[in-house]
Length: 277
Image 1 (cartoon, rainbow, N blue to C red):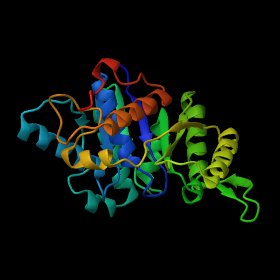
Image 2: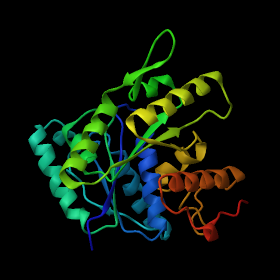
Image 3: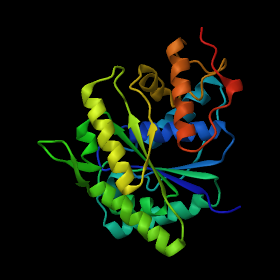
């Protein structure tokens, strides 16, 4: 088996939904019968790590079955490692990555909402970088800078520079291209002038720095509702229904399918479509 395909979910701003996107990509791939490994580099928060711990606990308590990823904690005491020197953090990351890279088809890496040494190292390892951004110029600021008077795009920002550097390094050293997809996440349900302005700037920047634009996940209650159980809409079935079903859950499932297709993966199996009650 060759080395796994590496998917890094990242940006340098908190609150954009990185962990939510990471766990949904992971569970969708798991239900596609792929071997998936997960690495959580947000050493303090550990949201993805908590999610899969919740998953194991809920499945065990309810006698249910659902696919689980290969997990390799960077550290048993993430908060302590977060305060360690960069060299120690990098060594732990490289050891964990080496452990899972040849055991899985995909490695999903969730990164912190800040610029860290291990986050940069993970981006340099990526085959695909997925960057969720909220429907706001606040989030766009991590990608590009606009003129405060005209709102014309002036230049790309620091995170775009980081990704560009990683792509250049990968192309030079390994002759490989890093694909980059920016997800329009948590879109408001209605059209607005601000969104049209933002759409235009995102499209202009995508042509300058070379990313693709895809649909993210809306701000739905079901995503938050399932998190404590360690479940996503990809897991819902007649045997796994920790909450009452509705048509909104079917819409959320279709939304996840569209996200996966935008990333270049086959959508969720149509035969597993949820029958809303």
